[in-house]
Image 1 (cartoon, one colour):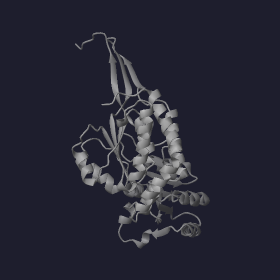
Image 2 (image 1 turned 30 degrees about the horizontal axis):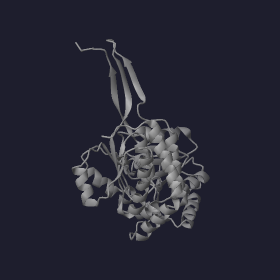
Image 3 (image 1 turned 90 degrees about the horizontal axis):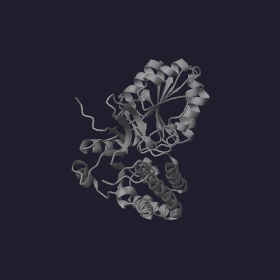
Image 4 (image 1 turned 90 degrees about the vertical axis):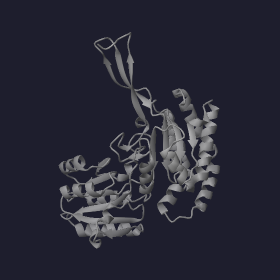
Amino acid sequence: MNTLLSIETRNAVLLTMAQFLGEERKEIININTKDLEAYKGDDISMLDRLKVDNAKVDEMIAAAKHLASQKDPVGVERFSFKHDNGMQVYNKTASFGTVLIIYESRPDVTVEAAGIAFKSGNKILLKGGKESLNSNLKIVELWHKALKQHNASTNWVEYLQFNRTETQTFLEKPTQKVDLIVPRGGEKLIAFVKKHATCPVIISGRGNNFVYVHKDADTKMALDIIINGKSKISACNAVDKVLIDKNLPNRIEFVNKLMSQLKDLNIEVLKAKNFSSDEIWYEEFLDYKILIGEISSNEDAIAKINKYSGGHSSVIITKNNEVAKTFMENVDTAAVYHNASTRFTDGGQLGLGGELAISTDKLHQRGPIGLQHLVTNKWYVHGDGQIRS
């Protein structure tokens, strides 16, 4: 087990990492271009997540710098109690130990997620997808360089260059202690990890997010929010389903405007009435598709979302605050919105500075997993000889 590094050392490593990312910007982009050229799949959302350009490098640098500026999440007092016998009891945050992150196609995860795990005092095991191998290895090389510069062991950040069989073997019989696994990717990856893992797993679940346009909606606002929700089809916070209240004034006009704008963006509009099965309602598209259906009430919208959504994000668009309150209290998703886009379900956008993943579990953390969530806790009890009678 690695001895916890001082907060000064952890911050210094992060700032040096930010510096190296800037200095090696061209090399990172060039190596990533090779990964892009080598990708032979037809998954457009994976290709989108795989790409690293100047803007993406800027985001990586900003993430490392921001993490360095945040307070130490380790050793934070959550509870204190003075026992009748004089013992002083504290509950404080503590690192998990070793965190394994399994992810697909996103080289920026190798910076942001690893940075969050490292800042919170954890050793990180990174298992990226084969499609981003060259990009990931380059970024891990910079992590090791930054760690060495501050006399810290390079095994704080370790890359597991495993194929699927080797990954399964490691999950079932780890060759080192693993305290937590966080899979980031599609449903197949998550199911694979859940099936084989022998330690706790935080599920970074699917999106399949809904927007409900209530009868008292501002329709201009509704158009903007739906279009924005579809602005990045590869994101887990993208909108896939739109429910339109059948009592919405000028409903036909609104639907025609919406379909026209979506068509201009080359987004295929699917109509619920054209599907005999309800399987389409469960599906996360990660594609230029959106499904539009009709609903008769707030209660029906809540029921439909709770049945079919991935438990990620949902929106109500309405001028009626009471209706919004009922919707937000009863929809069972990690994030609920009133008159705002699902695209804000993101650690940086919700004030966390970044995220390891977005959890659709209810334990240990729900929604974006930020720096302050990648810790467990332990009890510190100070006595002077007390025994229990």
